[in-house]
Image 1 (tube, rainbow over the protein chains, first blue to last red):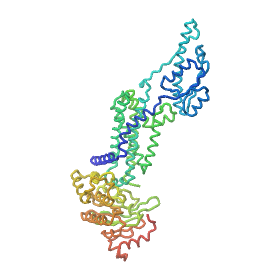
Image 2 (image 1 turned 60 degrees about the horizontal axis):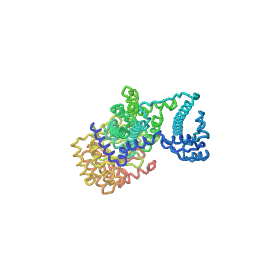
Image 3 (image 1 turned 30 degrees about the horizontal axis):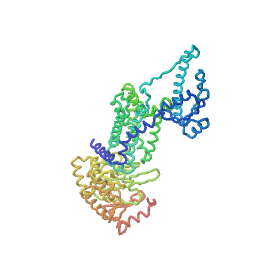
Length: 378
Length: 247
C-alpha cells in the first residue's frame, strides 16, 4: 500500500507539472462538448437555394416565401433560366435549385397536379437527404393548404368533385420530442471524452517511461507488477472521472440535457468503462516501444470504435456484419448506456447486461496486460 | 552464508544467433570494489542486467547476495542498487522528490525518508538545487544524485554501469571518493568503466572480450601476469584480439 502511495504521489506530481498537457486535460471536456455538439449536428440551417420561377404568380411567390420563412433555407438568387441556376449549383454557391413550372398556379387551382423540380447537391449524401425531406415536407404542407382552399372554393360553388379526404401521419418522437440533436449528441460525446483520457493517457505514460529509460530503474526496484499498474491506472482514472463530472455538469446546466436516469448509475458504469479503456491503453503499451507507435495504434482503434459506435450514425443502419462487430465495441455499449440512462431514464434493469459485457472485456484486457507487462527486458 | 556477494558459473545470454555473454564465471567478495571492464559491445551491460534481474539468463547459474537470479529475482531487487548507463531519474521531479519516491518504493518509513533526504542533499551538495527539477541540473550532479539514490536503501551490492561517463575529471575524482566511502561502509561495488585510471582504484577487475571474461585479478596481479605497466596496456593487449567490432 505504501508503495502505491509513493507511485501515485509521483504520478500526480508529474501530471500537474506537465504544463503542456494539464490545461488540455481540463479544457478538453468543455471544448469537445461545445465544438462537437454544435458542429456535429444533422439539423439544417440557412441552406442557400436558387429559384427559377417560370410561373411568376402569387402562388409561386407564396411557396418561395414559405421556404424562407422556415429558417432552414435562404434565397441565394432568382434566375430566369434553369441553366444559370444549375451553374450556381455547380459552383457550390447553392445546395438546392427549385424550378417552378409555368401554369403552376392555374393547375393547382384547377385541382390538377403541378410538379416542381428540385435539384439537390448530393455530394454530402446525408445532408442531401435532409434537404430533400425538409423541402418535401414544406411543399406538402403548402400543398395541403392549397388543396383545402380549393375545396372550400369548390364547396362554395356547389361542386363536390375533387372533395378528397386527406390522411395525414403525425409522428410523435419519444424521449427527445423536438428531435434535438444536441440532446442526442452530448451523451455520446461524453463517452468519447472519457475514452480519450482513458485510452491515451495511461498507456502513453508507460511507453514514455520506457522511452526515456526510467522504467529500467523501476524494474530493479521491488515494485510489483500490480502495484505498478495501479500506480499508472489510478491517476488517469481519477482525472477521467473529474472530466466526466465537468462534462456532465456542462451537459446538465449548459445544454439542459434531461437527466432522467440516476447520476450514480452513470458514474458507476463510467468507472468500469474507464478501467476498460485504460486496460486497452495498457495493452497497447505492452506491444509498443515508442510513444509514436502507441499513439498511432490508439488513434486507429479510437477512430474505428467511434465510427462504429453509433455516435454519428445509428448502429441499426449498419450492414449486418458491422452490427455484429459492434458487439465487441466498448464505445458502442457505453454510448447506448449513456443515452438510455440520461435520455430515457433507464435503470440497472435495462442496462445490466451491457454492463456485464463491459466488466468482462475490462477483466480480460486487464488480465492480458498485467500478464504481458514484464519486469525484465528482452 | 558464503562470503561471496556475487557468484556466477557459466552464465550465458544468447540473442538469436548472437551470444552476448558466453559462459562467464565470476566471484565477487563482499565489500570489494569490483571493476568490470570490456570494450564496447563486449557484453558488460548484458551481464550486468542478468545479475540485477532485468534480464533472464539463457543458461548457467548465478547467485547475487545469496539469491538465485532465476527464481529469486525479486528478493535480489530488495538488496541491490542499480545505476544505469542512461540517466534514469525523473527529470521533471526535483532531487527531493526523486529521493522521496525511490526511498518510498524501497520501503523506507517517513522518519528514514526525512533523514535520508537531508543526508543525501548535503552529502551530494545539492542544497542549491533542492527545488530545481533534475532535468536542469549539470550532468555531474545528476550522476552524483543517481548514485546517491541507488544506495538509498543501504543495499548489499550496488551496480554502477559507467557511472562517470561524460563527467569532468574533478567530479570523477569526487565520485570515486564516494565509491570508496560506500565500499568502506560494507556495500559491495560492482562498477563498469572505460577509464583505465579508474580500474586502478578497484580491488579486483575483470576484462571482458567478445562475451567472455579473459582475465580476472587484482590490478597489480593483472599487470604482472601480462607484464604491463598499466591496466590500460593489459586492456589493449586483450581487446586487440576481439573479433566483434566496436559498438
